[in-house]
Length: 350
Ligand SMILES: [Zn+2]
Ligand SMILES: [Zn+2]
Image (cartoon, rainbow, N blue to C red; front, side):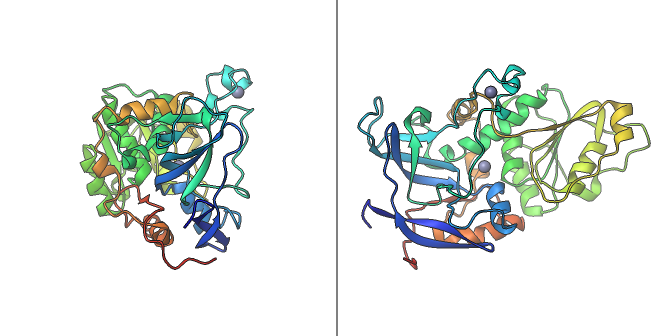
């Protein structure tokens, strides 16, 4: 394997992924070539593959950590071997969304193009050097790969602004739910109940700091126009399931907030009368705060997060991604599955 070519996991259509040898990307002006150390499998990747939204020829994977392997000659301030993640392009600061303090939905940021998307389920990616962030020495490659999904969880916390004495419900204890629980604990919120059907994931939720573990069927049907007996101030919906979203709304106290983080293909039904009489708020949470990657890196370096419980104990190479995606969708993986693209270079289609 030379630096001219690399292995990449290519989406070939119809839910199929194939490890191929492709040209290694060269950095253009202002860019760096990053050798991927770890790349996490995201819930978005599950949807893109299993529901066939991805465009054939694309390479998925956006939750990565890596090392600078090549630099364009005009890049200053970085050296080969530096450990980095790449933050998203900054919001413009001027559009209507930005003026309203909502940089995550800046109107001048381009949407992700999945047709030409060149992600990090590959040995190398190209990144604009202006977006690079140095990984602190005490944050290892695995933890650094959590920067992006942790920034997603922290953004939901910013929008919902939980107080330490709030009662919080988290529905779904997949990787995103676990990160939300850990981030809540790190921010001083301790009264956290997790609703999750898979016992493996309930156990994991307890390990990352949930106080109470229930199954979805344990969630109470609310009396008309009144909160349930033990209601919640905030619910974070991390499963992407329509029934979980509707049930989470039903558990809220007066003036409660439901934050939707998990995407899904079935639309939830919300009781609007209940929203009116209890003045409930439903918020979508997308992407990150303006400084979300910096906040995530500083939380990761503070030793406050249970990294070993947030990542799945079994790491995989590119060849293992397809089955790991199916297992994650079935709730059979314990935490964030991390991919090491340099592992197991066999069975490659050229
Ligand atoms: Zn993600
Ligand atoms: Zn803007």
